[in-house]
Image 1 (cartoon, helix red, strand yellow):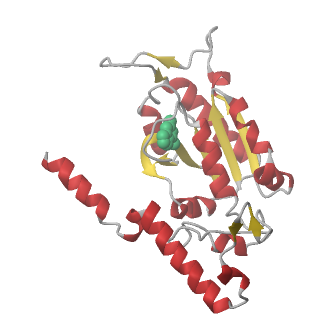
Image 2: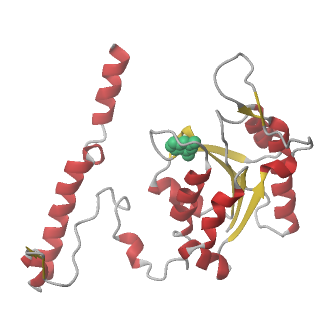
Image 3: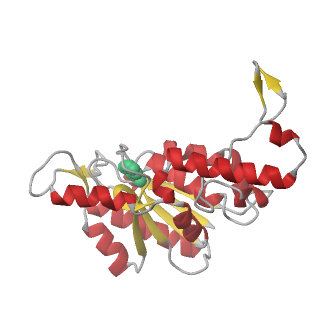
Length: 250
Ligand code: 6GU
């Protein structure tokens, strides 16, 4: 998979050289290119933002550096002989579609992803139109969750890690991918390792019983109890709607 990232803080993405993703790059499974948005400005101050039309707080990222950066990403990808022709453009932002394991799996099937890291209040809306209409890109705005980060860089690190580990060959033991939180809608069961007693605490006896059916049943119960306690929305997806109805009615 090819991954391009455009940011005004390319140093943030240095973490992509590390650990699992760094190893996948070394192994040729992932080809990551990070681009500095300011390289696509033409003024002395390398300006990437300006005040919003219509007023309001904060600054807006200018369309011009973004269009040139996206042109460059597409041209460089073609020069590198990429399959499929065009990247799926992902724009991280708190106003996007929620990022989930299911979305990570969809993105892991793409041969080419480009991430556009916004800062300030966001990017001039016409950049999305340009990407879709002139460059023919699929564009998805994706959010990590209901809270606000200062920019897309940290979100890209999270998304690239979630997507990268699903690419065949990146994780040695593919079985470890199946028994995970969010792969089947339940949270993971508690886990223990040696010693059997630690600071007066025992490992649950069933795990030492050698009774595989009993262990599987205990783990399933634990997953249900943990999901009910921490993420009841996963067990009763309609509960979220009740809140929404209250908000709309008031
Ligand atoms: Cl993807 N970006 C930003 N800037 N803030 C966020 C986010 C993304 N997801 C949650 N908050």
